[in-house]
Image 1 (cartoon, protein in one colour):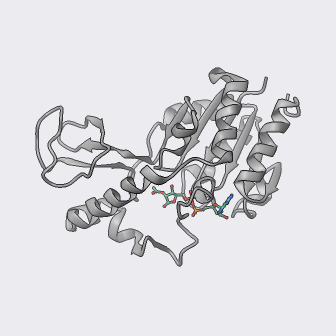
Image 2 (spheres, protein in one colour):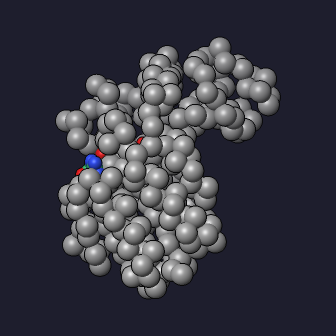
Length: 235
Ligand code: OAD
């Protein structure tokens, strides 16, 4: 069985009804990224930032995974968690809803809050605001969305780089390849000898450098890829 690392981006959730980042004139739910997704924005206008993520968190209640999420959960079952790692840039919970287990949210999670006073992270299904109290240290006004904002360090980097060095196949799904370090993962995996594959609606910024590319909606190309792995096409 091959060892596979999958990186997903907003494109895998598009057919579940979640907007991607760069298909909307650079606007994100009508906000410029700097207004809602930077530490500076949170310091300047915390209520706007809380509200923005509260709305996005609430929308998850009506959002269901699609057949691409399901296919990746099935691939994990097929390979076993030892030989599989799913790294997502997405902050939605559709991979979990589909049943994925070995999953790292490198850009954080909408369904969690982090305390800036004691650094604890908590499941947070409800709206978050400046009156929310940290369940661990009991401070108020110290909780923020557990989201990696622009200018902040993504999560789980050492675990991810170790898996990239050890994998036989690296697959990038539904990501435009604009945001580093995720956009450079394929180069890292390739340097350690992995076969690199892109699955996307259209060729991404780095498409030429992948060993293989399959283009179309995620609900088509991801299940097709998983079926191919099961035939033994990748070892
Ligand atoms: P983007 O919006 O940059 O790219 C989405 C990609 O998905 C594009 O290449 C689309 O062509 C593709 N796509 C759209 N619909 C699709 C479909 N039905 N099937 C397959 N592919 C489809 O989103 P990301 O690459 O995920 O970071 O963005 C990366 C990061 O930039 C995000 O995690 C976020 C953002 O700023 C942070 O918040 C830190």
